[in-house]
Amino acid sequence: MISVIIPIYNEEENLTTLITQLNGVLKDIGISHEIIAVDDGSNDGSLNILKNLVKKNKLLKIVTFKINQGQTSAIMAGIENSNGNIIIPIDGDLQNDPNDIKKLIEKLNKGYDVVSGWRKNRKDSFFSRTLVSMIANWLISKVSGVKLHDYGCTLKAYKKDILKNIKLYGEMHRFIPIYARWQGGKVTEIEVNHYPRLNGKSKYGLSRIFKVILDIFVVTFLNKYFTKPIYIFGGFGLFLLLLCFFSIICMLVLKFYYNLSMIQTPLPMVIVMTFVSGILSILMGLLAEILVRTYYESQNKPSYLISQLINFNKKK
Ligand code: UDP
Ligand code: MG
Image (cartoon, rainbow, N blue to C red; front, side, top):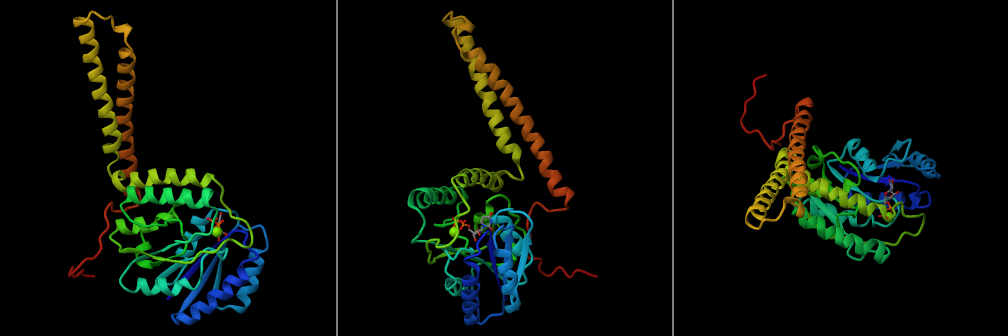
């Protein structure tokens, strides 16, 4: 079963066309399906239009938010309330092409867990969008080790199983392929169509760039250090203490061999700064270690993922 998920924030002019197109495409594909429209606290007529559409569409479902909580939350809510084993998020503004769903599913069925859409011919303004996202995509693929051209494209196809353990925050729906790969999923991409936005306004300004950059830090940290934060905090702390030690040596050499008074150099300052920050970093690392343990142990979460248990013959 296919679950198509649409995050919607003030898209009243686009919904009727989108749902009609989706119905046509999904009928054509011939697999059982549902469309989950998530109204992310729209304050235009979007919800009313959806409610009217539901009357005629048995396979359309609506999830509503009272307040605007962002595209990532909307997509998460859709996924968590879906029944399909194939999940397809798609934008509600007609910038993605529903006809691409067929290609995505064909590729998924060749044994992939994630097929990501690549808007090769992106129809957004060059400087504020396309260029910025090219740089972001390059950065993300460098730090994550998952080579994709277009993380930001909403239109992707996922096997439900790979999403089971993934929780998303902030702007992180773009990182699902990365989490999937870290859990051993097979990830690939295909080119998809992209259209200019004809109705309504884009919901994002430049502030998204900062959010995505900060999220890249989070993802890198989670990837490498989430279970061992002491390695990054403590590593930094040890580096500073080493710097402190060298500064002391330099200061003593200058004093006793070159007869240069300690306070004629910035070294005493450097020594105090590096010492205090070094110790603090290590202490913060220890705190973070406690946090991580609380996270896993309070929820009885294992800090590893088992993929299969073979021949365990559990007795009931
Ligand atoms: N969206 C949402 N909640 C938000 C912002 C956006 O559900 O807070 C939806 C929006 O209605 C659209 C999709 O997410 O269906 C993508 O948004 P938009 O087209 O504004 O982003 P862009 O294409 O400009 O990156
Ligand atoms: Mg858009």
